[in-house]
Length: 387
Image (cartoon, rainbow, N blue to C red):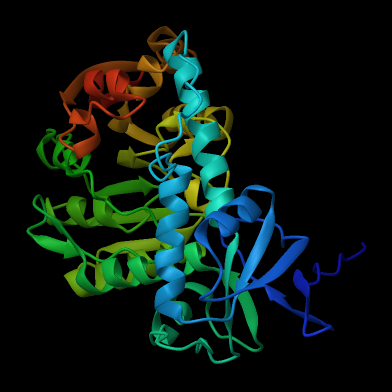
C-alpha cells in the first residue's frame, strides 16, 4: 500500500521593491493563487483597480485598511454596472428559459466573485493585519482557519465573510420553533430560512419514536427540534467536521447533548429508526466552492442517496421526512416527475406532503434575475414510508 504525501500549501508570488517575495495563499472558496500580482495602496484609482481585477491581476494592498474596504465597494459597484459614469452598458442577454436564466445568473455571479477576490490583504502569523486602521480579526480567523503558523495572504472579500460569520456565530439566529438561538459556525449553512424548520416543528410524529436520525445535521437545528418535541434519542450525522463541531456546541448550549449523538458519516448511521429526517441541498449542480455545498447537490447525489437508503434504515411503520424546495422545478433543473420516480424506484410511497411558501426577501424582490421562479417556490416536507 502506498501513501500519498499531502499537497504543499499554495503560495502567492510577487515582486515588491525589485525583490521577489512569496507567502502562503489561503482561499476557502478554492480559488487558485493569482499568477499576476501588483502592489496597490491609497493612491490606486478605482477604475485602474477594476480594470486590473477584470484582467485577472491581483492587487496586494499596502495602504490604509479602511480605504481597502472602500475600494472593494467601488469595485462591487463597477461589477454591478452602477459606477459606469453614465456610459451606455451593453444590453444583457435576455434568457429564453428559466434554466438559461439560472445558468447566466450563476455565470455572472461567478465572474463577479472572481473579480472582487482580486483585492488581497496580508496577514501576520498571529492573524494580525499589518495595515493602518486594521481591525482585530484574530478571533474570527481562528474560528474559521484554526491555528495559524505563518504569514499568509487572502482576499479582502473572504476576510469580510469571516468577520460576518463571526458576528452570526456570536449573535446567533433566532429560531421561532425552538424559542432559542442557533449559532452557525463559518462554513456551516445558517438556518435563516425558518419555514423549513417550522415544517419539522408542525408535522405529526409517527405513533412511537424512540430514536430518530437527522441526516446532514449542519448546525444541529433539526436534531435539537426533534429532541425538543420529545424524541428520546436522536442520532445526527454529517461528513463535515466543521458542521459536527457547530452542532455539538449548539446542542450543548441548548441542553440537548445528552439526547443527541453526533456521528461523522456519509448519510445514514448504522441501524434503523422510526423517524429519519433529511434536508439536502435543494439545487442539483456543482458547487463552485466548498461554501456552496449546502446549496448545490452534484447530480442530486445526497437526495438520491437518502431516498435509496431510506427503506433499509426505517423501522416497521417508520417515516422518512424529506424537506425540499421545488425551486429546482421552477428553474427547469429537476422535474417533479423525476423526483416521484426516484421515490417509487427506492421502494417508497408518499404518505402526505406539507407545504409552505418562503418568506425570505428574495421571494418578493422583482429585481432578482430569478424572481419568477423564486416567487413560485414552495418548500415541502414529504412524509415517506417503505412500500
